[in-house]
Length: 498
Image (cartoon, rainbow, N blue to C red; front, side):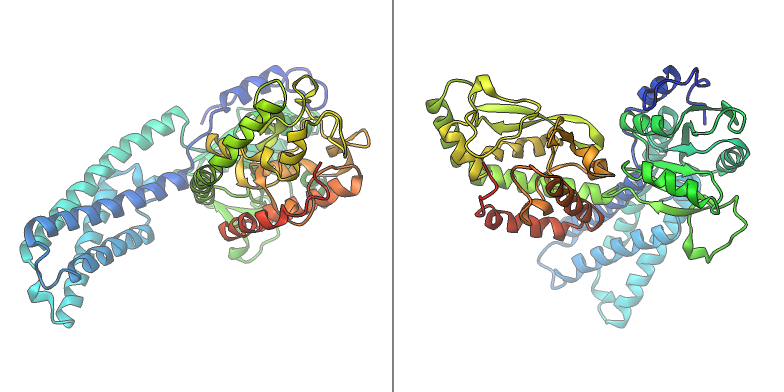
C-alpha cells in the first residue's frame, strides 16, 4: 500500500478540500472492482463452463436418443453445483487463493475428482451407473479440468494486474488519528491477503493530538472535509479508530457520517471490551463493529441494475405510443423543444440532468426548480397541465434509468435548489442527504403513499424524507416490484399534482 498524498497544508474553510485532499480524491474518483463481485463472477463462469462442456460432450458423443436423456443433464447440473459449493467452502474463491495458481489448481482437481466420484456412487445406488458412458465421464473430467484450470490461470493474471493498477480493492479512510490509528494501520498492513487500500486520515483534533502524518499516511482534513472528500472519491469504508467507550464523540461522528453511502466500521482491536465472536465483522483477523452498512451494494446492486434495465425497456415499449403522442401535442401547443432537462441531485449528491417532457413555456422553464410549480401556475402550458397531472411528463426518465443515472424505484430526485418557504430542504430536515445513499428513482415509496406534488411546508419534506429512508433501510427486489406495481393506481390521485 502507498500513501495517498502529502500532509495536509493550512486548514481550509469547513467542508472545502485542501490541495492534498483534492489530489487524493481525484486519484480515487474511478470506481474500483469489488472483490466480492469478482469472486462471485468467477463462480458463475466456472459453473457455466462445467455445464456447457458436459452438455456439449453429451450431445456430441452420447446423443439425445438415449433413454437417459434426462439423467445426463441432471447429473451435469448436480455435479457442477456441488463443485462450486465445495470450492466456496474450501476457500478457492478467496483473493489470497486466486493469487496462488498452484494451490488453486490442486484444490480444484481434488474437488472435481471427489464430486464425480460422489455422482458415480449415487448412480451405483440408483442402479443407473452402468448405463452412463464411461468415455463421456472421462472426457468431461478432462475437459472440465482443462477449462477451469485455464480460467484460473487467466484470473491470476487479471487479479494481479487489477491489484497493481488499483482497480480491485476496498478503499478505506481512517477516521481519527494518533497512536490508535497508527496501530490500526500497522495491523491492516500485516494482513497478507488484505484487499484494503487506505486512502488517508481525517480527524477533527489538532496536530498536537493528531499528527499530520500517521504511519506514512497523511491527515487530509477534518470530518466536514471528509464528507466533501467522499462525495468525489469512490470510498467503500470508513474505519473509526476510537475507543468504544468514547460514546459522545462516536455519536457526534455518526450524526455527520451516516449520510454517506459507505460501510462504517468501528475498530474493536483497541478496546478492552470483548463480545461474542459473532458480534464482529472482520478485516482479515481484525475485529470490527458494524456501525452502518452501505445500502444496495455488490450483488444487490447488480440485481437492482438488471431489474432496472429489464423493466425500463418494458416501460419504453409499453408507453412508446403515449410518448410519441405527447411529443406531437407539445410541439403543436407551444414553441420550443419537446424535452426539458432539469438539474437534480442524484446518488451521493452528484448533480444529474433528468429528462422530462416540457410542460412549461420554453422562455419560462426553471432548470434548477428554484420556484416550484403551484396550482394554476401561468408558466405551465395547456398540454403541460394534463401531462403533469397524469405524470406523463416523467416518462422520458426511463432513458435516465438506462443511462444509469436513475433507478426505476428509489427516492425521487429533488431539484438542486429545492426549497420550502425559502428554506433549502437540507436546512429543514436533519440528515436529509442520507436519502442520496442510493440512486434516485422514477417512482418511490413516498410517492405511492401520497407524498407527491408540491412541497409547500416543512412537514411535507420531512414526511417524504422519512418514507425515503424507510425504503433505503428495507430495500429488496420484492419491495421494488411492489412499488412499481402500485404506482399506476396511486397516480390516479392527482390532487397534489399541478
